[in-house]
Length: 128
Image (tube, rainbow, N blue to C red; front, side, top):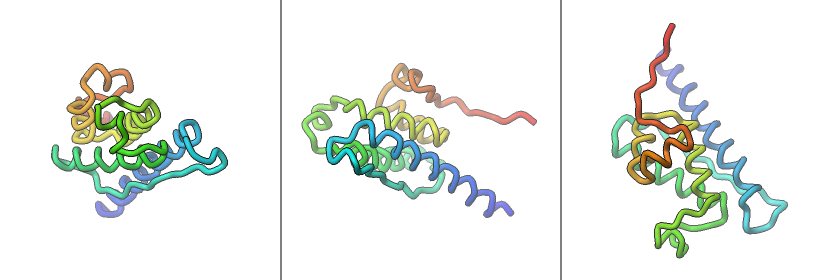
C-alpha cells in the first residue's frame, strides 16, 4: 500500500515536471517552430540536500534541452540566466513541491527570486 502510494506520488510529480518543460518549449524554441522538444526527468523524491541539488541539475539540463540552449553557452558560463531556462526550472521546482529541491533552488537563485515563483523552503503540512 505504501509503495503504491509512493509510486503514484512519483508518477504525479514526473507528469507535472514533464508538462512544465513541454509547456515552455514552444514559447522559447530556437530551432524548428513545428517541433516541440521535451525532456523527461526520472527521479525519486529527494530527501537530502544532495538529492535536491542532483534533481535541480537534472531539471536544469532538461530545461536547457527544451529551450534549445546548453549549460556551456556563454550566458551559462557567465551565470546570466536565459529567461526560457529560468522560467522552466522555476515552474518545475514549484510543481514538484519538495523541500530539498526548493532549498537547492534558493541556494542557487536566492530567496527573492524564489519568492517571485512561489517557491519556499518552509515545510508544508496538510490539515485534515
